[in-house]
Image 1: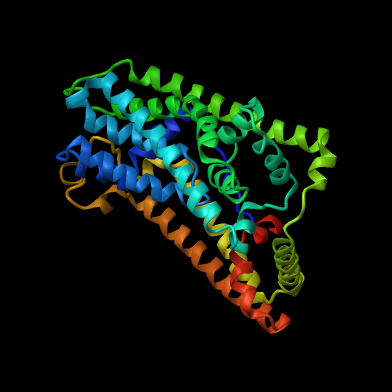
Image 2: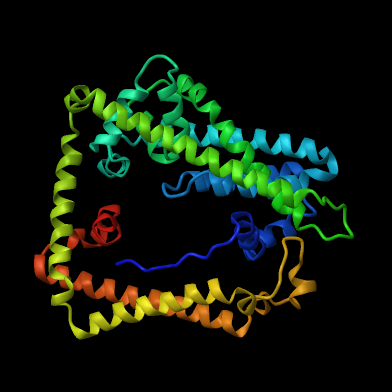
Length: 378
């Protein structure tokens, strides 16, 4: 089930600035760390960053971006601007290396007997089997470096652990990720500097620098991902016999086959022509509620939220109540979003009951409804 979110032509840098200036949690974090030392803020950011890196869907981009905002803000009084930027870049690189080490040694190696972990990595898929060939190369080839830098963090590091590769060569081949980290950290830094009020130490060039860093970051992100994808696809075509010759994980293969059969049963039982009027009504209501919510925010943003910057405080600018951030139209968008979510939750619950009744195999239904394989077939 897809929802059309729509797109609005606007400057990407303005989108990021608007997003983060309206993010309550981030502003509260800045406000709460004002009186903390740089050491305390660094420790807190490290703990939060590691926790986020250990979540499979979370990429490094938002972690580096937030570090560029929070750590530079905390380090300015002690280190100055250049010192704070260099400190934050070093912190982000250390955080990345630490996360890769945990993902490889603890999740990959220690949990390689877990079928679910190997299944989440997609160890039997053709791209991951090609990546195994590239990563197992003894030398620091361009392909190996690009795979470690450009491919998604969690599955790549866990795959290295499942393959029981030596940690040090993998870490050394991951160090070029700094070319990805630097422009993202600078983007976060200039987002913060551009939001400073004029009466404080102003950086009039921050807005221009922000646009340059956003563009540079986007180009590097796309280039590294495209390069890694090209290397994997070239390996799949030029070394096809080697890729096909790799032994399949039979346990994961059996689990995939079972899950695929359950997925097929799910969609056969819950196809549109077999749904009840109530289920169809839930889906239609969920769709139009989400469309209303998204387009209300996209088209009437200024009528949904009050103007708010990173350096504002809730006490001074929102009267001590964060809900004052919302205008009436903003409440419409949020209520529509919640209604859409509740309709989808009710539909999924009914669909689960239908699969249990139709297949008599309810033990795997919960896994089915929330697994990535279900998403691929939606």
